[in-house]
Image 1 (cartoon, rainbow over the protein chains, first blue to last red):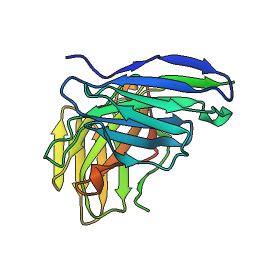
Image 2: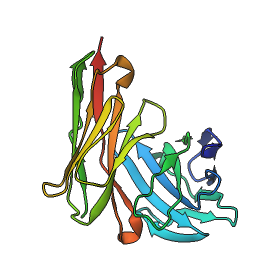
Image 3: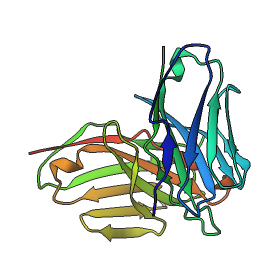
Length: 115
Length: 112
């Protein structure tokens, strides 16, 4: 069973540019969550999509947006990049079923560097 | 503000010892709890989950949950140098759209 796939793995962008990151969840998983991780800040929740609808949102500016497609694949977009956006961006997929227990499985992440 | 707190460490233990990692949470509505391990430069990987009071064992790992005191712990028996990593604790509320609340993680160093 394939795991969560994130592309690209590494990215270098210039301030002011925009970037799109992609995440393909585990087959059968309909929930995709995005996180930003920087040293000392831990995992910062960006948003969660389930069945193409945003279900949860973190405290990030509107420059950060996402979407989910009918096949559950998700994309995250950051516009007008700032130096502080340099981070590891992680995607996690889960079943998000009826049970309250919803294990999340992470992709390898996309390391974004803004110069 | 719903929070999950962990001692940042580093927690240093000798090889073969028991490593004890603790986590407290503020949301009494939290029902499910997860422990993830993250090696430097890698993504978090799920070690264990627990949702009932008491202990849950899986190999060298034991998760403990005490809902009355609002804490979760992870014990690693016979610690190995390969266990050296950051351990993240997460709590999930069945309501609130089942959002996961994450701790900042505890860094564990197992010394040979």
